[in-house]
Image (cartoon, rainbow, N blue to C red; front, side, top):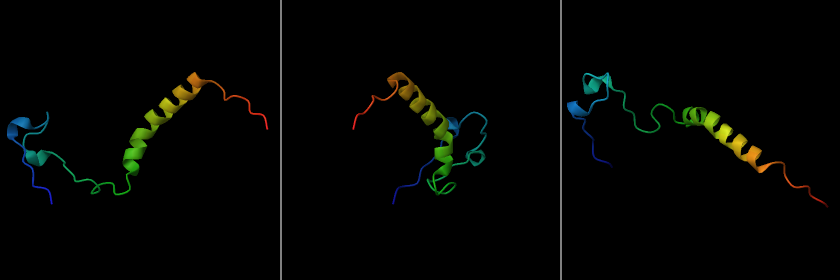
Length: 64
């Protein structure tokens, strides 16, 4: 079991007046399936795949 954490008032992100203004979750509490993460990453991943495949050009012809 991990020890609990603390937040100092001086380390709060902009817009948070108190630690109660923040939303902190342990992994799996909000999105157990990780589909939210996949949804956020997918556009960048697809763009990278497109760039790599475009740079590589068409596949070589295969002879059987």
